[in-house]
Length: 99
Image (cartoon, rainbow, N blue to C red; front, top):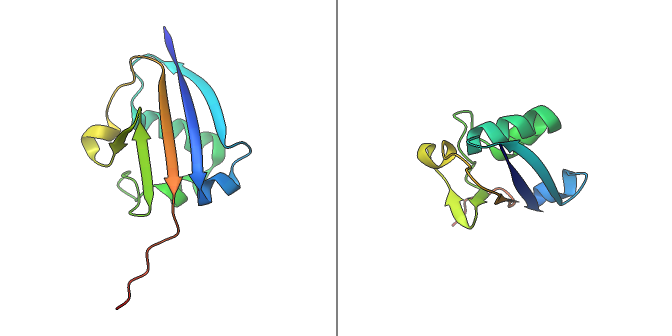
């Protein structure tokens, strides 16, 4: 069995993608982490470096959502996709301190 994942890219990452939206078919039960590993294989290390910290969590300037729920910790990255889902990826400019 498989699920359809619609991936929508926004912000800075959108400018580097061949298309702002794509649909891919993955096995039922694939985790969000495994999905991003698949996308890194497809788009290369620059995709990973733009979005994920070395531990695999989203960088502070990146917002990931799965069906509208924010993906921000280990548990969310290990969430299994059991039905068709929408993943949104927003990369904002890096935050700069000031004061």
